Image (cartoon, rainbow, N blue to C red; front, side):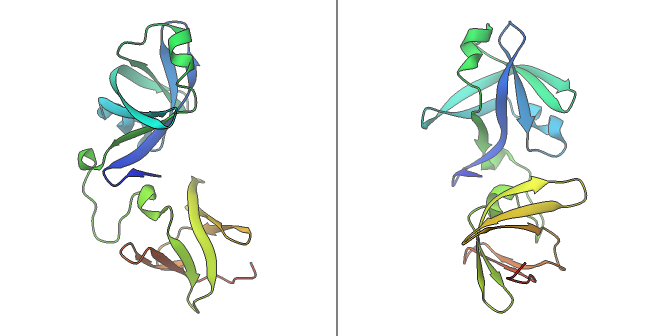
Length: 169
């Protein structure tokens, strides 16, 4: 999800973990532990972005657990439940040609090869086999994000993604 032109959402706080101010974190990075390399997080709370420093963290099952500086009890971190975690785009690795962060794709208009508008990319899902675009228009569509076969063109400048997809499907 695009936070601002300079920030990218890389995860979400799931809720408290234990009683000493730790939180569960759902990482959108690949690998998921990559979120821990960003020591300065911007957390979206109550309609605004607040800077929080990551004190420590580690993998825990399918999630990450982390302790944020200045948070030392369960009650304090409870308010962070569900908050998105963003980082400055400048701290992310440079991408190669035809590579995109998920946040770059969200909000793009999705058109078939024949110019039929299917909707807008709302978000993406990770399924294991391939990522899936959730496209919302007159109805919701789940379209595999398979470059070359299904997704034939991404034009960030025009805000358009072209797909080889039957509009009736």
